[in-house]
Image (cartoon, rainbow, N blue to C red):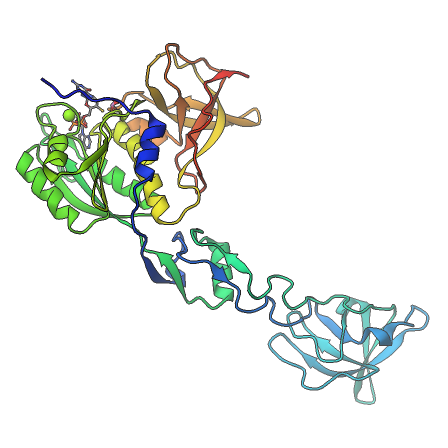
Length: 430
Ligand SMILES: Nc1nc2c(c(=O)[nH]1)N[C@H]1C(S)=C(S)[C@@H](COP(=O)(O)OP(=O)(O)OC[C@H]3O[C@@H](n4cnc5c(N)ncnc54)[C@H](O)[C@@H]3O)O[C@H]1N2
Ligand code: MOO
Ligand SMILES: [Mg+2]
């Protein structure tokens, strides 16, 4: 008699897998290689930014007091005691009646407390000396960029779990991080199972198809921030599959298999998990596609049996594997980004399970409209290339109509959700 599987609700299955702890390791990464990586530590400012009071303009550093009486009719004349560009420091102290020609970024000379822009000063030469006329009063601190006005020493400028994007790179560079403390990418092994699978370089043969899932999953791993390690393809053979799984488990944090996870004659993954003594968190989820998605743990390692059907495999990864990788990386929002959209077309098929419909998004009437993309079968592969979101349709006895409000999960967003599973819209008319 075939084993009976009890489907677990999606939210419960995700919660079960998120409880599993996988160690995060730190490694130093060259700043220029660090884009897209996750910070392993908070970064504290070890100096003020800017580190000194400086001029925000090309102009003249003055003593505000000297200009108090200045007016159009009675300009104040100041002697130019020196000139400095950014990177240079004025050596002495500026005395009463003096000014220093100063360029943007140069430190304010001692004695000065305001800057007059070049455009507002008339400069001239007399007897080999340089002067300016100032025609209005300046106040203490006029046109000064203050030490620490951007960031004070001791501030936490970047938090652990932040993704390094170009703005983060600028902050790291400012504080001298030639090497960045990053979270090591978790190593995720991939095994494709199936005697029907051809390598992508092979011509088609009767009864066979090319192995698209392994490449798809490896790309999903990279997109989620992990390091994909391929362990190739195995035929539908228990011993071959078991030995490849055992070999992979020597070196990976998480192992993903695709195919062979359902109830068929050649579906060996359930038996292999049993043989390994792994504890199975779930082996059926109340969702479509991907109902056969299986997750188990063996000590610290996680093993997923993802469906062989491409769309089911894809969705199983995004819902159950991606957030685990993101959690290892320290992301505060490890799940797919949830947002709202309007259903762009009728979806008449009722289903007791929650559906994840691959969808194209269009920006219409000031919001997103989500249109089901391509063939809505778990075996479909081409619908995946058009999809930028999954429409979340809770299980029920009725279909859905165009114009209903729905929740969607974005597939390629840099942003994520902390926990998208509460308050899923049951769909209603707007
Ligand atoms: N009697 C039942 N049959 C099936 C059930 C069920 O509950 N009772 N579940 C169906 C559902 S739902 C799914 S999903 C599939 C899951 O199948 P498996 O995960 O066991 O995968 P396979 O049987 O190995 O293959 C299924 C399908 O996918 C193709 N495939 C497999 N690997 C790849 C790959 N690497 N790249 C591209 N395509 C792949 C394979 O050729 C098959 O067509 O089971 C249903 N059956
Ligand atoms: O797991 Mo299957 O994809 O539910 O359709
Ligand atoms: Mg099968």
